[in-house]
Image (cartoon, rainbow, N blue to C red; front, side, top):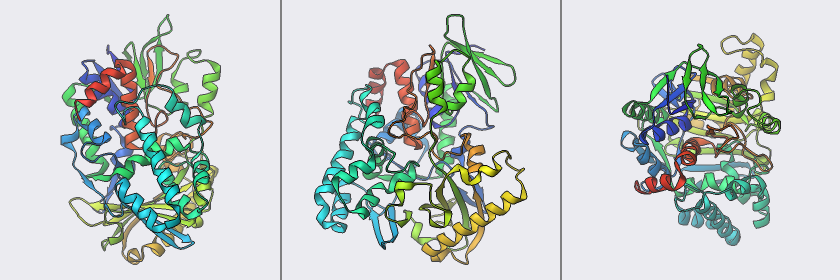
Length: 495
């Protein structure tokens, strides 16, 4: 079968790429090794409660904001319904030592006001920080449709100051620095590793607005799937790509599937983990230095996670997420604390059609080494020693969660957990990275274009994690193919 493009991987970046190319008139095949598209984004249900595994909330989705414009361009905006989180506290920062709580409001002006109320002598630092965040977002291609598409932004993410260095230059108040770093729990890189530019590009959209999607990530996947069908994209699920085929001139000629079948195409977009890409590309397709760089890329932290159903509503999570920090400086060593002292993120889970939270999803950052003793095992075939380890980890998480949300105690109807090993197998990341490859100072992540003619890259490793980052990477890959001026003109028409 012959196609203009084959897209490898049907996560959000692959779905975005396939839709963009198809709506531009190309014949597209989308290949996914799982049985369904976007398996991580779909989540799962227990006892009538849906648990999101790849989507909890997002920034930039209010009317007229970047993600709203992207969804309009992709033709899915009328298929999803978003709703605002609590505008006076969509995220709640709570520190145990010292005891302190801060509710993050929506909107830069309100955020500045609230920060200055909590830290009255830090107005100058707060203004500088918020101004710098705005400047980064204004310089980011596609977030700002008038920003130049060049290498400058990418270089600042690799060579610029870290978040910690930037905050240290603005203030000596450790609690304020911790509040401004809290969202590192959403991208899995500690404040002393992530560049300020990368941090700002992610949090800037949350500061504008924070919204959820009715029906959670599953409804978003369904919207993507409907659009694929309408545009005539050929979808191959349960079909793993094992090799990118190259012609005698050294250009992409197609892909080979595990079944032995081949799909012919002069170009493809790969959205897989960069290390997986090394197994797909033929020997000699990449220079040794490039292969070595991809093989050495560090992943974000992994995590222990808990999923619970409560028989009573969890009022404290209605329209808000909780960020719990045992100590103000613990985000400088993300993933390195034992489970009973690790920071964690808590988000609500809902019954279908229900208005009040009926469960929760908890994320406790950790390192893969916590479960490395059983890395040779596979899902469903773990040894008893591992199962006992997981049971104790779940017990520790439950005790800590009930201490900060006492209304949960005694009301649990269902409780289950996952470990870094679970994430490794479910997310197809070598070491269970919660958000894929790290974006950190000193690490050169792959760019959209490659030296192999006709091969382009997209995915969280290219731009940033989350739905916004995945959509952006797909649009950036297609902009590289179709022309960024054309892409931005078409996006502006959706404003």
